[in-house]
Image (cartoon, rainbow, N blue to C red; front, side, top):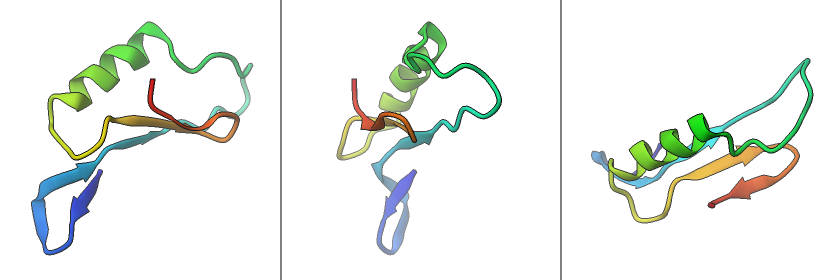
Length: 61
């Protein structure tokens, strides 16, 4: 989570970093990840929650 300056209780954006190591790299948007992003969306924030991977970069699906 990225918080606003001088206000740790206010969420600016949410990023979930996924670094697949040692297993096959495929579509990171599994059902579990989609549900996780939906739950993050309920926390608020100025931007839609994003998944960050080395293969796909920042992705807001």
